[in-house]
Image 1 (cartoon, rainbow, N blue to C red):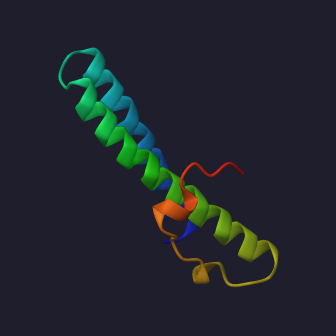
Image 2: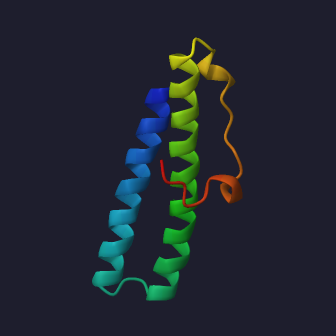
Image 3: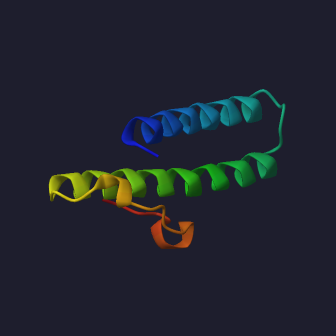
Amino acid sequence: MDQDQILARIAAMVDDERRLRDALASGQIDSSTEHERLGQLERDLDQCWDLLRQRRAKSEFGENPDEARPRPSSQVEDYQG
């Protein structure tokens, strides 16, 4: 996945997050469903942000950004950069 694809995926997940919050507010889903789906979205977002950071770091140091690989969510969860 290249940088533009990663950024598009992040934008789509942020939109999904907004839709979930709106669905909860309007009573379309319950809080446990929202919580479960948001948890997965947050893990996926953490992985995308990590992959994007890896790609940018490789580019900055003259390495091939296409060699960056997604890491397990357990490794990047709650990453603060």
